[in-house]
Image (cartoon, rainbow, N blue to C red; front, side, top):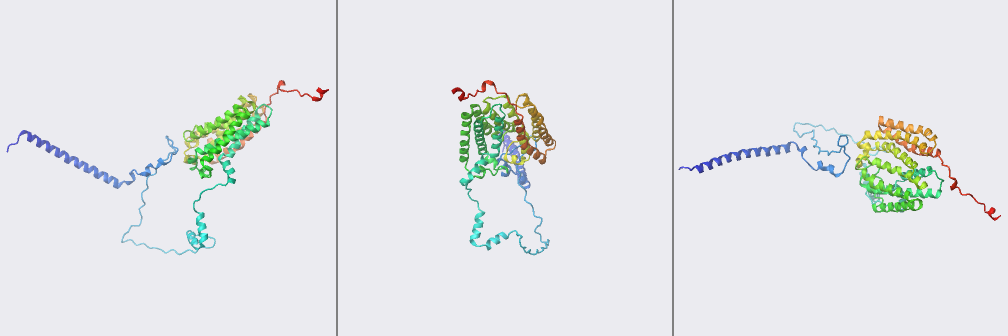
Length: 439
């Protein structure tokens, strides 16, 4: 038979396609076989759920290096060193039984002792080891409220506000002093309670805060918020109506800064330390405005003392709690920027000397105050320098405990050197004797 040119062309095209299909099939077979061998030989490189486990919790990370949280790959099973071979002879040495001595608890003896106990005692022992609902009696509520409001921190806030009131160059009014102190304390209770309400899931990861009332479930979140409102609303109202509107505004501003700015910034940026220092600097200003009714340079100077003092105090405290803050997911200088943490503590410790020199310049104290406060300012600066030069737990602890007595000592020296302004003659009302009028 004779083939036409069209049939010859179709035959050539079919033969070339057949060769290409055979070659591609061989390559695909090699790719599939190599993929199977890779999966069988290196199972540690498979992507499993353990690689995505880090998404369950947010950690503090640093892009440049240092602190980062990585997922741990699944560990390989440890192969046994003893293979089942016919020619292997294993000699087993019998270990003699050890008789328990009196007063020594042998592991595993607890179960046997439970069996020997009577049924009622065994049930009571097992019931004591079970989880139970935590119930709080009414007699325990004062202690719960004290921990919820951070009573020690609130006491420090009230003390600094009282110092600001005492430093104002006006006659002392005990009624206004008490009202200002109570209003400041109630405002601080509200701010601390709302702070704990927001940080419950993060406080549960830290050893320092895991025993707080909301973390342990001693009170409900609604109960905590109700307590905060019951403290904050009367506190701000008392400062506004009974003292003056400026002090009430500063109290409300401090609650806003602490709950809405400082608390969320703790998980976002290290600027939370500066915002927290502003929050701590407002109470002495509130004490000054409660006495004077105006915002003077002396009030800002007192706030500057508290602002600078908080950096060596808190940076030294957070240095020994770096693991805790990292576990809770808080961005602190001691965790993400340790060198900056040491520099800032030293810088503001030395700055206390300059602020003490400004006191007589602004007619807040006499010139005696810079001289008698110089030793304690030099000492805290020396400890801050040691902390900067060699940051370890011991130096951080020394700087922290020094800051605890440095602030009350500084305020006491400032109060003893207070510069009293002369009372104008128009303010002095002449005392009229009623007997003289009758004569």
